[in-house]
Length: 569
Image (cartoon, rainbow, N blue to C red):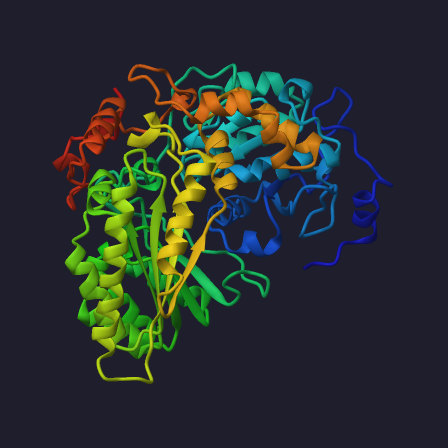
């Protein structure tokens, strides 16, 4: 990290202050004529260095000669933050851009603003700084943060974020007050200014006009470091979105259309970065037709690699043999539903026999750790689904043992990971109630009983309380911001949730009416409400629906994205 100068250290510790930007007497901040941009990353440095979204923003804005972008890792938000790059005080930055990926990030963001002396409520900030919130939360459901944010960036940063920041730079340096500036940009594509913008706000998407299946600007990490989850790895985005249309998965709906990167673009990023290792990121890696050729290219140049979760039907003999030759010894497969009926309800197009063949193949080829993921708390589940899963778990063990054969030195451990279903906005399950904390705990206990005596099988579960918290913050309206304020005042989420019980019940514990208007519908993601409702009704009947076709939206028309992607008249 660059060592701050003496003047910078003075400013960082409050001994030298500049006037509040945008006030009648305040000159533009002295950053060599550039706009000072604070990029706020919830969590610590290690968490930040393992996330791609904000690094895309950093790369985009840092390329602009009229901007001075600095990083702030917020931790838990208790202390006034200082720039990771220069040690400067957050108050020196008239634009504070927060990249928010998870609902639990709301609390450190609120704490950070308060600790820095920035009023957390936008109504209390008539002047600069301007707090801009981006990331997945901004276009899945911005309502719970609307009392805090001056504006939201709705969609993909590649499609216009830099232009918005340059417009703010011009306004700031010309002495334009913040309310006047926000009024002038309130209907800019991709911008949602609460209380000003005409809604719904259309999400902006970086789509190649000639080919909606192409990811023309794949994300790549800008920074690595020893504290990152992947300390020496260049993270590469292989695909964005997912064509399989699993009904619980927000990524499969909010990132439509699903797009694949060009192999040549990824090769160029690797050649430029010269990393020791590459981490492949995507929701549908095995759907990428160039996966194996790209991995062979990495291996030929002696670049190590790691992969995120794979689909069992994509784990072919050829691919798995190659992965083992490259030293990969851990494989992750997503099963999702405990029973075939639940998997149909989820629209998880998974052949149980294909899954078992993948398990047997992995054991035979010497994989020593298999991770299997399932989801608990489906609105349609019952005891019979877990009875079926107990039998299927036995079949997984048998497939592993067949794969081992007579070998005794090779043994494949199995870790069963069970997460709690949070019915997310803009998915077919947005109408569904969420299972109670007691119900989720009971399901986890049933899994514990199943796995306790199984040799080589471990169970990892999430915290149902945290899942319910995520549910409130992802499905609530502006009233959910009070929960964040309570958590800041009461010292944490648990005390706050006890004081928010009535609202929690209203947000989570009921099935929404078919015609109920949702707080997140201030955003237009492109997938029609009618198609989501149709999929919810098919889920209740455990019926499959087709996913996105390989040829793109023009060849489909089921969800409305084909019409949405066409230029507006």
